[in-house]
Length: 450
Figure 1 (cartoon, rainbow, N blue to C red):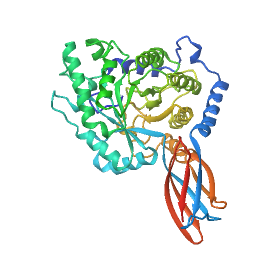
Figure 2: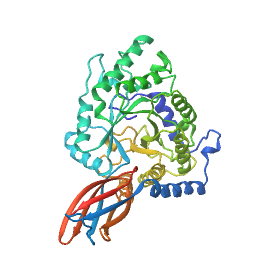
Figure 3: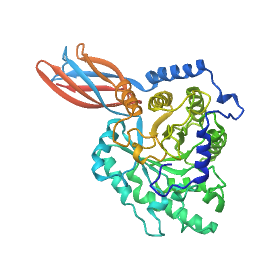
Figure 4: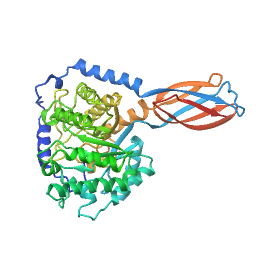
């Protein structure tokens, strides 16, 4: 996770991460689920593209009448999609952004994204017990509201990093449980309406390093979700974990453990609404067939999926300048901006092409303040990188509907991506506009009176 400067010291994890990134040799876990040939990867991409047309679009009918309700025989109709139903997101972080750079940051963010993930790290909001500071959370949610971005708040409980475990937390089991209870309930009762999605537990599987598991036991996960549901019964609650995708064992070692954990929690009716899966490449170029396979597998658990943290690291962590070799068993060579952009294109295609995925969040907009070197979409000078332009092509062109059609006896049919639309009608020297929503459920029959 990308947290505020000076607080991210998860040394063990980063050491393992850097070690796996330094080599281009793929160490598999011995299962053939990690090895896919060229034809399988191409087939996965082809299937995803076909599914985008099948599952991400719907049909609508526009009926155009005059003031007396009679159909207008012929009209020119301009149909322009103005927002996506799908959540194309980015981690929103402005606390350490120079004020003069905020307008540019907003412009770049808004051009691509309709979804903002905003940090609720316990140590940052309550560094001293009882002395809460929600200044930046409130500023960031206000910014998202002003620009009409949907919001996810994350994480509420994170036991494997000091950002989620302030120093004042007690070690006594009962006292710590009481502190968690108070934190979950007080935060949600106060701020639940600031976000539609709440990440309740983040990265619970590093049990040896999980402060809460060490002092309470792994049952804290279930308890946190049940308390969250009681405090915020209408909000969507999410669990999140890394280590699912890829051929390298240090990248995929949670694949089975996370699946089994979520499966058991769901079987116990723990109120998990969304399964979050991180996707930090860490120098590896995930094979499309690998990603597609894992998404289908996790979708079988019966909950919507979100790609909560996506990044494609291209530079060495130590000097943040020398390029990494491409790791894994899919592509070879050395990372550069163009290869990074191609990785984005493939990964987003596979994820958007899975109908169970409802969001993809890239983990940081700018290289200047990036958690991992080179993962941003704009460089240190504020210039859009090739991966930014690739997302712009996909989100705003390939996967966005913009049509001009004509009605036939007052009726026009079209097919478009789910989301909000502006429809402009021209007929008989008159013009009118209307806003509609192309929805997944129910009939999309739009009536326009000219």
